[in-house]
Length: 371
Ligand SMILES: [Mg+2]
Image: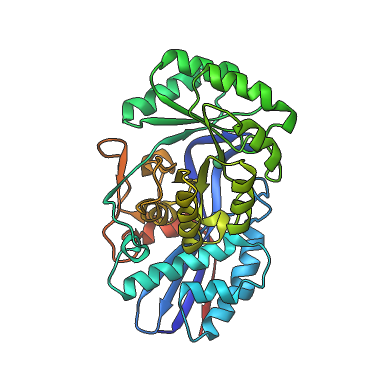
């Protein structure tokens, strides 16, 4: 199997509503989509989660385009193997750029699964037919709007609610949600917004409001602060941005800084590494779960397949399609099912179709490379 062509699209989709985190507000999402085609007509799709601004991570659409278009695709078009693990090995010499690598690796996994007549889930060894999901609620203009927004998601059927927090938007809004909904499972995610000195303050309100999990409270390198927060805590301390590979996970485990692992294919360089990290977490007896990066239906499909693997035991940050974009670029949409779940597409491959109409509407630029 060899590649015949690779097409990289830069697209922009409009969010149903603005999404605010500790680093800013997003109204649109501009990102890269990759389509690979082999000489025997198989297709594979991947999405790059890098944003236009280097706020969640140092990668951007521009750096990812440079790596994918300038290096990875020319090498792949010359390569005699399309094996995803081989691709990771041959690009290991390039430091970082994990989101760019993940876009290519996920497309190669899609191709490899289709070549075997399997879904991505089956290819990776997943068994679940449905995956449990929750919703991530951005910072809202007012506390009343936050409580109403949470109420709407609970009505829709989401069971686990994750609230984005930052200094100045934490104890009071979390208490308001807890008072309005005394029995729900609440997680919080600070996206690195607190200084290490905030350990005791965070612990106080998290314990008082019976928060089940505190995610990435401190900067990604602040492993010791996360370990202090985790010591004796009745809540889980989850790491997201801090864990970018096997070594960072080993160090965090050794330090006692991680008692729940958020896994994102984009952050760690693909689905194979995601699976390995989740298996390592299971051996360490800590739960893993699949995080989200406001993916379109293409990236979300990859995430849902990933979440079908056994080590992912907590609900994923993957909501139904109508929660994200006015018009998605993949069909059919993901719909929230019984027990706060999404169905794992049957395949082959990712099991969702690229919508040509959606692509035409969203397309900003496109590059095609031929063998
Ligand atoms: Mg997070």
